[in-house]
Amino acid sequence: MKKVVVLALVVMFVATFGVFAAGAQEAAGPGLMVIITPDKDNTFFTAEADTAKTVAESLGYRTLLAVHGDDPMKESDIIDSAISSKAVAIIIDVANSDASPNNLKRAKNAGIPVFLMDREINTTGIAEAQFISNNFQGATLGAEYFVELMKEKGNYIELVGKESDTNAGVRSKGFHSIIDQYPDMKMVARETANWDQNEAYAKVESILQSNPKVNGIICGNDTMALGAQAAIDSAGRSDIFVQGFDGNDDVLDSIMMGKIDGTSMQPNALNAEMAVKTADKFIKTGSTGLTEEKVLNGCFLITPENASQWRGFTKK
Image (cartoon, rainbow, N blue to C red; front, side):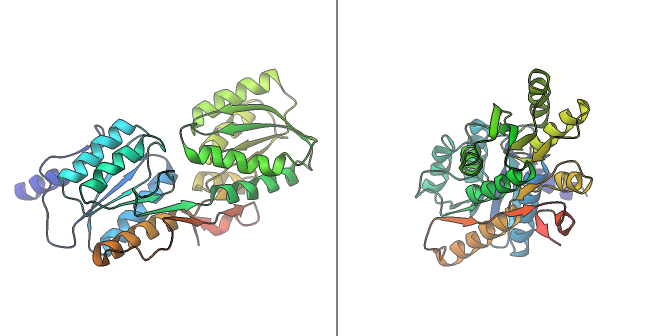
């Protein structure tokens, strides 16, 4: 038993400090894949990490899960540890589109191929492949439904994600590519809530107090949509439409309860699966087999009519 405990401690990732336990050693099999995501509590990132882990282990790889918390410095430490641990590949949802490329470049220079899922970087030639949800397409789907709900008129709030995240800007542009075509749709506030539920609650609560004639709220992710809906409930309002983006299970439940009205489902489980399988192919053959570094996977519109058909970012 003592030997088992010691071995487990050697390879366990200490999430609190964002580093690996020292001394992780190579074992039999194709090697170690390090899977890095932004958050261990957000269901979106949990599903992403779980899918990547399951697929990698089904292919015979050992895995270590790490969380950077959207902090490029933590991400840097994790990547250094992956290099020290002689990982055969890094599967990552990056911390920051501007700072992360320098971190990833160190892995590439050390001979460790990097494969991105969910968030993209604008620099090419560092990652072997990037598997990205088509955020613009998903945003247009959500915006079209949002306009339909509001009957092409009314006052609305937009909640935007982290400004440092490329996805936040792409989704906002997608929303406005549709909504701005309707002159009777008036944006009365646009606030950054940093993907955070509590921050979204506080922002919406404040806006509704100063501008009660709001008919709808369109959100850059589902976590902010949940915060917006909680603020609406707290204000005793039932006449405000809420549109999210991601397709997490909590929002699916809210849609089925008649609270949040819709969301754009990201294929994040598919992105994670493709990242791991492409990494496996690259390790074995030296090629991804792709013609382009970035692969865009389409999103799906979720409404009360089809919300029950989805769970864990996959169709039942």
